[in-house]
Structure formats: C-alpha cells, structure tokens
Length: 504
Image (tube, rainbow, N blue to C red):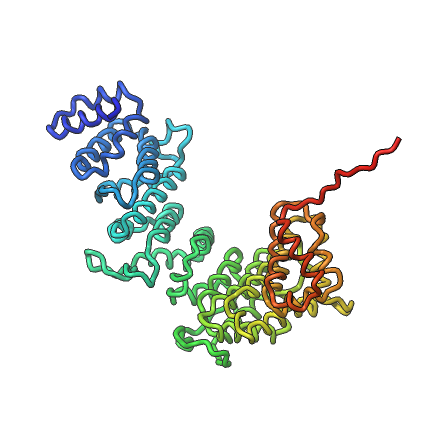
C-alpha cells in the first residue's frame, strides 16, 4: 500500500468514527491528484463506499474548485481499472454526482481555477465513465435511466443527457427493454418526450439541428425505426404536411400506389437534409417516400440539401426490412427519370458532391438484397444509368465516364472512384462489364498511378474483387497470372528501377 493509500485508509477509519479532524491535514499535506486517485477505488468498495463518498463530498464542499481533479480521477479509475470480473458496488449517490456534472456550464465558479478543464470536457468524462459502468454492469442502466428521466430544458445540457441515454439504452430486441416501467410506474418511453418536443420546436432551430445530428451520429436505427412520432415531424421538415388520419404507419410497403392527403410546405432552412435521411430509415410507404423525394428535389437548393437528397435515396433502399421491399424501392427510383437526374448527376456537382454521389451508389450496390439475381440486375441497371444521365449524347459509357475521375488530382475523388468500382466488381455482372472496358486490365496492373497509401489499398481491394469474381474463369491465362502477381506483390509494391546504365 502506498503512503497516499495508507492516509486515505486511515482517514476512512477515522471518519467512520466521526473523527474528521484529519481531513484538513490531508488536504494540506498531499497533492489533490494523489488524494483523488487514492480515494477513487474506495468509492466502489463494498465496505468503504459510503464513507468514501462522504469524504469526496466533504472535500468538494470545502474546495469546490477541486471538482475537475476529482472527476478526472474517478473517470480514469472506471475506464482503466474496473473490469467485469471485479467485485465492486456503485452507489446511487455516486451516479447522481456524476450525472450532475452533465449540467455544468463554463461560467461555473468551480472551473475558474482550472486551466485545462471546461464544462464540456468534464461532461464528456462523466458520459464516458457512466457508459463504461453500464457496459460492465448492465443492471445499472435502469437505475441510471431513472436518474436521467428529468431532462433539463437547456439545449446544451439536454443534448448531453441524450448522448448518454442513447449510448446506454439497450437494443430494442434485448432482454432489457426500454419500455420497462421504473420504480415509480412510469413508462420508459416518457424519457423521449423532451427530445420529441425539441424536434417540434420551430422557434429553436439550433436545438432541432443538434437533436438530428445526435440521432445520426449515435447510429441507433433500431430506435429511429420504432419511433412513429418522428414521421409527421420529419415530413414537415422536408416540406410536407400529411393528414395523419389517412396515413397508416404500420401498413406494409408493397409498392402499390395509394393516395395520401398532403400539402406542400417550405423546406426547413437548416434541417431538411438530415430530416430526409432519418425519414428514409422509418420505412414509410414507398409511394409516399417517392412523393417526398420528388417534392424535395424540386425545392432543394445548396449543397447541404443536395447531399441529404442523395443520401436519402440510398438510405431508403438499404434500410428496407427485406429483399423484396429493397428491390421495389430501387425499381421505383429507376423508373423516375427526374429522381435519377438529381441523384446520379455528376456533371454539375462540385468534387465533394461527386464523392457523395459515388458513395451513395456504392452503398446500394453493396446492400444485402444484391445477393439475389433480380437485385444484381437492378444494380447493373443503376450503374448503367450513370452513363445515361451524364453522357448527354457523347456516346460515353458509365465506365468511361467514371474512369475519367481516376485521373483527378483530388485524392478524395479518386478514393470515391475506387470504392464505386469495387462495389461494381463484387457483382459478377459488374466485374464482367469492367473487364470488357478497354484499358481496364492495364489500369489494374499499373502500380505507379496511385501514390497515396489509402488509394493504393482501395485499388488493391478492387483487384481482389475482380480476381474473386466469376469473371476470372473467362479471362485468358496470362491475364489471370498477371492479376495473381498483383495480389502476391501486395498494395504497396513499387517496381525496382535502380538499374542504371553506366557510360564513360
């Protein structure tokens, strides 16, 4: 046991006997870092946890500016020392203390003497520590959710609360349901009411943007797909008002045409793109979403909304619950020239948007439904539509158009091309299409064209996709041998050109 640990142990014993006179002595004789790092393990000790928490709160009452140091030590102990196999306890008092740190603001006087800590850094530490505790001890989730149920109205603090909630709340198909009642008999879904109210608050667009960004960043599609309340909110943001009495959210999508009573609204000036992406995950009926896309495409302006539109199409296709629905969705898009013009158009797009378009197409080409014969044919129709939309009468095929971007000086654009071509090559029909293009084989074998590490890796993935496809059985033996040699050489191969002829 170290000296600091011994001091804390002695102090715990003395305070347990109501003798707190040595606390001031300890604070004056030891560094705060040593005090808190020594105290932290005792906070989780079954025998000393209560008195250790008393020491901690007493210290923070005497010297509130020590909170950043205390928070850091507790965070480090939880994230670096605790393990699932350890025997430890977590008191509700400690959980409440850590949750209170989510409510700190930069003007808090406890931060005035701290050069390195801000309210954001302390809140982030608390979120990480609480998330780690819930991972190690899943039963803590329900206790923590009951503490978090009173969501503050301050937008910054609200987002911190929901950041933690979205990290710890279990998957909807797990044994621990978010709909379980708490000790007070409250339905677990009540915790989401402030979030939904914030999305509806058109007087606070920054809060709306923050919530949408949080929903996207946290990647909780299981929750998004379960929240029927999102539909009318998201529809308003993308410029549509729907008669909810005429809209059955549980009706299965079957590709048939139904009439919905909708009226047009302006796009939300800041949230339309994100709202469309989230709406795409809601599995709303195909004919309604098709109508949403057409309306959105006619109203959108600016790169942010265009990116939302492009992502909204691929997200909707890829988030369908079965292959038949995904095929129907892609068929509907391919049947709408107006949508294809907006989705696949590379001619007028800036480089960033070109990459977004290529990534969107790649996502569809790699989705699960492509395993079926119909899915492969639909994806090839999508790929060939790129040439149809961007050719404008010049007689250029899709592959010819895409290969022009391999020559770009912009690394991001080249990477987007490699990923798109690799997605095409994973489709046997696509691999055959690529290898038929004049110069494509030579492009695969040329290791000097790409100089960026990530680009070399992505191009190498493309070669592997070709070699592993069925097209390899149709190629000449010498072609196969050269491609095998590229695989054997690896992505970073550089030809040795050091042999130089010497002359007098």
